[in-house]
Length: 407
Image 1 (cartoon, one colour):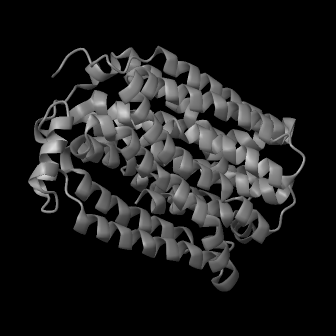
Image 2 (cartoon, one colour; image 1 turned 180 degrees about the horizontal axis):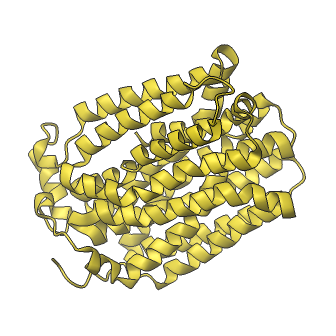
């Protein structure tokens, strides 16, 4: 589900050249359209988290998949040259983001109900590997469909895949292990023993006053804002950067454009596994906070170096290393928000993720503006600074400190 949700996010950056031609859009307008998704996605994170805490991950995510499939298809359903094209496409992308806002609050509430605390790093790492997997396969899939059927057909194919995935999810998933027929009694016992409240159905819930009074929640939230700035470059402008700035053709750019997303998938899964292993050996601070801080600082170094190398191939590899290092930190945000939020983990993770999407929206708009005034190197150096700042904020988080008051 995560992979397909990112297929629907990244496809517009691959088709951006043809979209701008058909609808006579400037780069600034394209950047604003890119940001529309992040605005809708970010603004409805809290609402999405609230919905999943009350409806459950199974129903919420299935409804969300149907919603985002509809708006993905609608993106390509307007005739070329239509009046007010910019406003119409911006609105469609906003509502697409609104629908996708339930994706990761749903996954985090599901993790809180199903996954023992000691295994949540790997679980979230695997879930967020879908970010890289979906984004990695987007360039060749979209390019192939565009070459043979046109750019509009690529959006319709994405919509059909999303509908199919939503149907499979609804058929297979259950909100709690006790509701599913597949786990045996030993597996259910293992799950219950590994979750602090023992019974996922009785997880404590917290008020917003309690959650927002926590300095750890705010440190994680601000760090995730910094984190969100960098991936958005790859989801929006990286393909255009390779083709326009580095001079690659459509086919070559689509292959080089896969590298950061493959690195994200590898970094996310391996980072989650490493985080759990370090937790067992050295404690939760080192496993969650230390691993996350390390990944983000190393990512900043790679981002600073990547835009300054001479060849497109070298730039793609170094920047991909930055994306992979960044995603080593990904699982920590979601594992800790599940641990802290418990029965309110959907709402809490939605709040935290809202700030990450604000960072992504800022990227979509500021990246071309910074590049136009100071060059593309400055755009990547800006993302490097955000990586280092986000890593530093992890140093003040205490993962062993529970929220102060239970409502």
